[in-house]
Image (cartoon, rainbow, N blue to C red; front, side):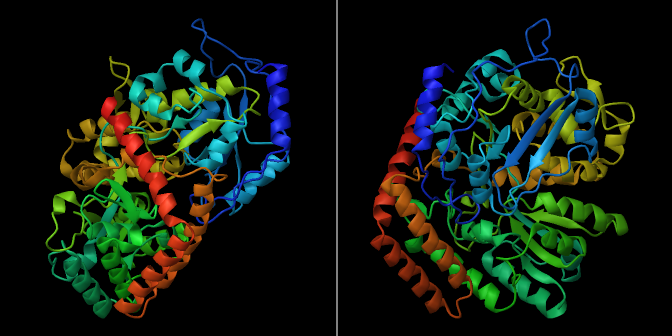
Length: 559
């Protein structure tokens, strides 16, 4: 970065104030950028250790990076406390220090910017917060590194990389869980013991589910009939929304659904209205967890572990249910949790019901900030993490004869899994329940294909619980939402201002509707929210995301 460019960025930053936006987890304010960061000269990475190929060589020097997750609810596990990150720390000499969001991601990012000290890495949604940092030169372009290092280029491929390309032609984001095939964990898990004791009834339609939850409440007063997880993030209620609508790919994230060739108000969608009445009925009849909007993941996990949940639906029930399943089945092999096919309203085509979605870009992204002293070393680490060895270490623990895998087969990609894995793959739960929160650049195709192919060779009783249900239920019941990525407007645009206003209306309406005393009250709340949103310019926002959606469809059709 030449001096003129740096001077321009600094002057620009001094006069720039980033508008308030709604962040991914609630209505959070985006940071105001009012002073320049300490931006090093491009290419000045300092102290790079290289192999003969010119690639960075780990282990020659200790590395220390700071990591910030732009999520109010996320807490990074202690680096080095689990077997996988301990192996990375000890063998590659990489130490990663977490920068906590302190429960308020937007405020924390603002503090870092005001203090002129961003973390080396930022992990978050592909949204306007990261885009603002990119626009003012605070993120490192990755193009040269992508060409130089092998794994992301190989496993993502040109289609995914091109979709990541910014308007200036460069790539700034390293994707997480990118893929070319369906994946995902969203759906419904059911308590084996309770289901068995209630006679294993049919559990397919929304009517079936309602009747089942009533029986649970009558017989098990200390059990939560329907557990949502973090409903404030859409968990549980989005899955129920899917039950009332075929080909539902947008859920509630954009406050809109597709209708023919347009995006239209979610409040007027018949499927959503039916689901809102259904959710309210579960709440007022005591069939759903009463603290759905306020509970934490730890509280949900505790209920699952203590056998106090009958049905659990969320965007990723595997994350908590696999550990609870291992604990309950250890005490009694007949107990634990199992997945059911997606719940649907009678009369709908169940093959078009998707309790979750995926897109080829995956979940979120990692960005390297311009304040990082050694951006190439960071990228080299991320590229290693998304490659076969890094993926294997994070998913199956350290390599070695006493571990779950010991080196690779001749293809250099397929792990040599040991008898420790084949004898009881569910013992991996302890590793994966922690390392899963440290997989920031997951390689979906490699991980899913590798574990599926190996576990297909094992007796059913010896297969990993999560892999078994992914293959049997969840992967085939996720919808392709790739056309709906990156629809949000930038915050300092008129559409961005409209979105902030209608998001506030949505958050209030969602809470009020959930506690509606009658169907009529629920519908009245939704109608009022739609009217109020339209007064703020909702239609202009809908026109904007319709245009973005159509552009995505066109891009995908030309690939």
